[in-house]
Image (cartoon, rainbow, N blue to C red; front, side):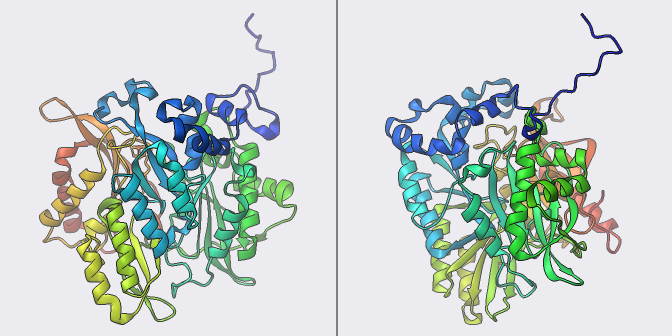
Length: 544
Ligand code: SF4
């Protein structure tokens, strides 16, 4: 019988544990409940690596293995027009993408050499620098995993929780500890979080992925992470961190909210755990597309979120604090810059983050020849060599240049990023990485006579998931199948114009109806940039 209008409305639970909403479970939640995802490590080593790909349990293959950085890559030869029409197993290749988490983007040259050698031995020499400071390999066979872990973990390099519904890599300033602009080096807080919580079952079952960023400087996109701590000076308490929660992109982009709290360095790990605990216990688990923390913040608002965290998890009030002074654009650290100790750091730009194992080994060698033992990756897919003496700069930059890593790149090379795309990603609709590399080369020729006095960022994404931040670019490109001038279906992009981080952080406006085919991309960007360069007034950012 249909309910009468006077019957009380049934409130459907959102899958919030703390409110007792534990049923019904979607398949992802069921898999996580049935067996903690971290436990798959034992099965990989003891069963799957010995018996091969066909022995892998499907719920491990498409679920739990992610907690150790493993995703099946896309089977070659399936075009983007068919991506959504196929069952997941029809897209699965028998090879894996493996993500190595590099918290704060930091490696020693010894670690970097090992990361490169793993690629040479087990990954067909593939390596991409991601915009979350990770390294991503492709073509990994399950049989190789024990040897890969032995080599990487033996040097302290982890793939633990590099993917999955858990705390992923923590973004940090690539120049933490050396920058003259930094008042607090946040690395001790990052180290403590890794030590206490990564690989622990306390946070291995979150509603969805959880992205963190901790930096004194505004170089990690604090507006678009699930949680960010960004440097700020409190008028009474001095330097500390301002806490932001609930940012994210994908199909429902949202700028993070400030909770209005000032956090001293030694309290960052506890407050981080407090925020993650609220998300774990109150996050929405019923519908996967609403399971990120941004939906909870949107419903609760920052005041309620802070109050629940203080009352139920921290057991104390946080100190109110001021907002940080916003920089004009997110800082990318490309070029040669003086460190606070008188040495230099050198930031170089691979085209759209694509390198190789051989290149990484060569970077480690070049850095060591220049007297450096430390390299960092940036959230803009760049590489930074630290601790270089003045006398070594020319040789190092020449060595890196020979590897295609320029310290003085064109604005196009410097500001173009691309996600993984159809080459390996099962969700992709279009090709991105090689397209971006060709676009950069093309624009360097086409626009050799135009030097924009404001950088123009171009982000290519293979689908709406926006892994390369479609909405925060001056020209954001979202992959889709479009109709070309001859009426044929072709790979192309929906265009978003005028996004950005830093001052006026906001999301690009989707230009209604404006779609370009991949083949037309060079023409399109040239047209837009020339028009902008001609019409730009002083202080104007890219057209919105
Ligand atoms: Fe894959 Fe889409 Fe993310 Fe690109 S944006 S890596 S295509 S999921």
